[in-house]
Image (tube, rainbow, N blue to C red; front, side):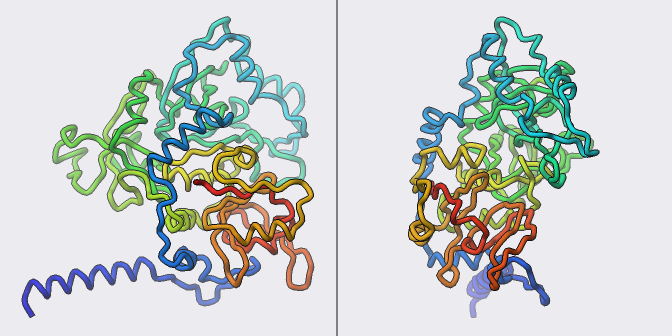
Length: 460
């Protein structure tokens, strides 16, 4: 056999071994679970991808996705372009925005020690929203988020809970923000540590140290860069940069988009390392005055990132969702994780698609193809529609969203980021347990789920 043929055979063998090692599903010898209808093989994405019979049809191209997002900004009340906000707000406008998020709850709230919040507690939080400092005319500034951050009801890290609930659900936690997110900055807290910001799908308070203030032109150029990488793993990390902690090991969650630096902007050595095996991106950072500066940051090519958005296909929907499998549930992006809508939102962001933040907002919005169920729709009628679902379809019940995976023994299965487990067991009895993470489950046995479905949405 000729040398070239041997080399070709070796290359093919290596590729095959790599592919096999990537797709081999590792089993636990004594695997058992209290989750009904689940076998260990169902926890592999390939189990569900194989059911698609090589269907890798492009569901929407990037032109259609761009038009989809533009339509949301124009017509959906829950999606905005923060860079389009006016550069000045009247006193009435800013007060209305502040009070829309920072207001006492109608329900009883408790601190971790069991003490109930009272009027004095709420008055203290409201005082820190700095409403007395709001002028007749208020300048709006703009910025980029520099690290994963939080959005809070009030400008405080105090955690509050419902009576009788566990301590996982902090009711002052609203959502999360991620590096590269653009925000409009509306108000500074009285203690000067928090900013009231409007992101593309939420208005709330974030720590001032997590955002860099810049001019709209620079921010727009960053967001509209033609060449960019997208984080396609649940989390990726930048490289360590010696003596520069602010640039080192930065967590990047799924769906984050960062512009690529031009090759002319760096040499064959960057921070003491040859950059040839890294993606070099422009990363937002703060100078000593909190102003926006861009720094070059290396992201190893071995991280789960890619140039450009993922093709929007059913196979990729499955693969992306399983990258979160087992991640701890985090209400409002708490616990360095995400909740049911954060989970869905991050998956779809890896294709370039935007969505409202909360499940109720998503469910009642008319984007995509929707099958709304009127109150009183029978379970039988809902099951007829459920049988027609396609992989990636979104199923809404009050306060929750799930993604359809496919059929197993003619029964629908879903993947979702969910806290509680409740189902009717084989004896017809109600079983209560916990999931508290991204989970694969059958849909039908879950207690009250089918009866509660309000909408099934297909993003197209």
